Length: 451
Image (cartoon, rainbow, N blue to C red; front, side):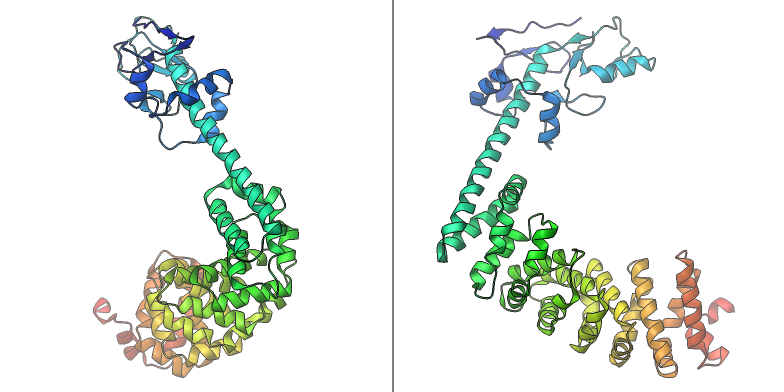
């Protein structure tokens, strides 16, 4: 067996098996220099050795994206917790190599050499290096976590006393810490920070304070009590004001927070039955200079559309024609949301009328059939059906001239949902009523195929 003798310095094993198969011994300084230990200084090693930590727990909690390759088992491609070396000089995780043997393989998985000795020898040197490396990373993570928790506690105490600019600065720092660290979010919640920050929102709150407070809250896990507290009319009113007058970042945060509140079972539709809220939301969606607000804006509008009491108000502010005009410029994820909203609104008589009166409704819907996704095709088809049923002679002719008949035949011949095929057949039949067979076939652009 190609064994290696680890040396000792001050009671600590400092040799390392380099994984090359030649049994080369590396001292700890060389291991650090060559990156085996990731270049972490030795200042934390004493702590790691003095405090016995569970290697498996450290590996799981750290979940590091980059680990020295010498620590990785060639079989599982996971960090080794109990490395053993074969007679070929190759090292594996004990459980993995034993499974290999149990399958009847008596070769080295890496080199495929036949083994002249099937015994395995614990690679204590490599284990020490693995343990030390993960310990250093783990203790550093814990220290940073404790530092973050302590700073969050200090900031929460500051918010209880500070006013004016000091309060704003504390909120800004808390926003940054919460956005960067999951432990900070937990500390804020555990120490009653949600209630404290929510209490800062009210009818006399400045937008400077409100925008920073909402930027913190939107990144926290809110329980039912916290959401109910934030649904107070004065707090919702402040969010609506900032949705109309704040920066783009503030508008997006207000939008996300309101949508988060709408997930609560006790949420009341009256909270969102606001002309000012819907107008502000449409401004955000239509803002061509800041397109990062389109997706959150449409997402909230979709949630609002699910409340029947508000649907009529959405139509009344001209949202239907505005959304139709936006369709050609939208990205696929935004496009699907916009079509969903228009489809929902088409269930209202005033929604159907608004779609019919918009000159680009039919051309845009026809263009989207079989273009983006099956869901988009479904919504577009449903909208076309609503409009054509409302005014069969007028709208069907416009739709056929826009190329609807040929698109419907594509849907029918495709492998999509049978329900879509059936709806397409019905719409095709509706559109054909205003034409003779010969003219309708020509509109379908099928003449060459038939001949």
